[in-house]
Amino acid sequence: MNRRLLGYALCLVIVLGCIGSAWAVQAATDGESSFDLLMPLSEQFMNGEQKMIVKHAGTYQSYTNDLQFLQIGQQLSQRFELPVSEEFTRDTDHLLYKTSVQDQPDGIDTSLLWIGFPDGTSELIITAQTTKPNEAATILSVQQHLADKLVSLHIKPQWNVMIQGIASNAYRTDASPLNDWLKNQLKAKVVEQYEDAGSTSITYYSPLFKDHITNGKQDMNLQVAVHRNSVTQQNRITIGIPAITVEY
Image (cartoon, rainbow, N blue to C red):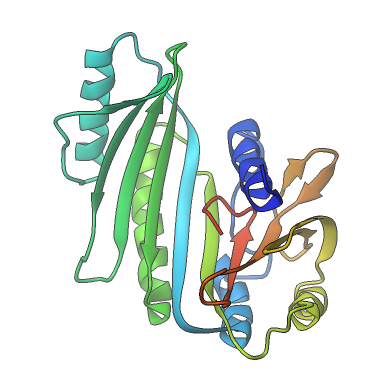
């Protein structure tokens, strides 16, 4: 496994292993959201189309058989006002129920993924994203709407907030301007780093975000990854709070 995939796999382990920890992603400063703090970073070091993502991942109720798994998935679709699927798929040893809605007037794409494991436990993932950077207020409104739906199911929302885009000329190969910005503007300290020929992933802790998760022995609440496309040679930057849980 290359280090890029290892870093991504590590994030998934964090998501699955830190349920019950503090996962709120609002900034410690009054009234500022995570997007408020990250947008200046994205505006300085990314150009062109940027993607903003909010993603909840957490355990959900158990199921006893395939039919019940499908029925619960359909109930979730209705609860989140998404299209109801008439089927699920089987992937190796787990079940997958998926539904989504795209190309909405508000520019937000929303998806639901429910994963059933062999022991009857499950994982629920709700994602909303937009490629319109000026829609930050809209995606935050959608996030609150989804959070209300989660609470109605007696689920504590556990959000990751991410911004992804192509690096601008302000980003250099050694990434020092980006790292300097994080250290100076967000008081971020490096917790760990993965690197290979095409990707770099750096994990930080910043006191500006009121909550954190534990990555091994250390606290973390901010992650930045840079991946170079082998065909276009462009660098793609992904920023995540408290971690990146999409492919970078």
